[in-house]
Image (cartoon, rainbow, N blue to C red; front, side, top):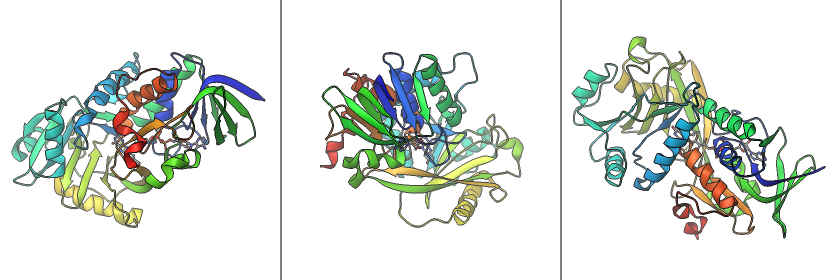
Length: 366
Ligand SMILES: Cc1cc2nc3c(=O)[nH]c(=O)nc-3n(C[C@H](O)[C@H](O)[C@H](O)COP(=O)(O)OP(=O)(O)OC[C@H]3O[C@@H](n4cnc5c(N)ncnc54)[C@H](O)[C@@H]3O)c2cc1C
């Protein structure tokens, strides 16, 4: 059997789901997922991802943030919100990478946030104790995205507009043809389309070999912790947080839906990690800021796909004219998925995207 459509999307984590949602407004789209959307082998699963309005990683993210916030809010449509504005508290030494980067991002058009001293942070959020000499900033309009719900909503929006989803079957090959692309599935089925968008996460180099030399996957460990003061760590008393700990960037979320405080170190090194040891290390460090916590009652792992400059790659495949891709969100891409999905849809349909993809071109590694 050969199906036809305008655009095929390969991989339905948050990037593929967002690309499908955008494409489905303007074109006939088929999305293909090897497993199930939101499966725990991918990078988009879980109850929460952080969304900051000023991002220390790159002051240039402001347009992506603005567009993504609009699109996340659009997904709400009278139902439960995907974006919970619980605020984000960032704290660290004033000249550390986190606080200096956030200041630079705010100066470049991001959101300035509210500066807080350690004492003010403790008054506002009684669970929080920050070291003397640190600075803190609260981004009240930032917070957390309900990740699983967000992916489900994006796909539901796409299918409601007529997009088709094939799950439990992988894509083996995507080749350029005179008229567009031929996509071959693992079961031998073929799909003819004008263009393909590949958002295959950690496995993307299987389908976009040009990316292979520039990507590495770094497993991350997350722990869920019960506080001895549960009344202080719910979303009404504790925002999402990022601390510039001496051992690394320690981030996490308040206990919402009774799951516990979720936290982890944002790790880019290549050292081997034992999940139980790492979860205990997170607890030890987190207790300095949030007070006594029980050992993790749940531990999860998830992969970051990372480029040498820890930035995204969003581009046309150098070897195939009708193939576009987005990858390597280097541990901070979820929040931008709606804007990146829209960018991919515009590129695949031959339009000029509202957000400029050129900073994320593959050629920067040449
Ligand atoms: C622990 C952790 C914490 C994070 N925290 C944050 C955060 O707080 N804020 C933030 O903004 N970002 C965060 N991120 C980053 C963000 O979650 C990822 O950038 C994002 O989820 C990547 O989505 P993706 O769609 O590219 O990949 P994935 O979600 O991995 O989706 C790719 C999909 O492609 C499928 N696939 C692969 N090959 C094929 C094939 N051949 N055929 C068909 N399907 C295929 C896979 O099965 C998979 O489902 C975090 C990531 C992790 C791991």
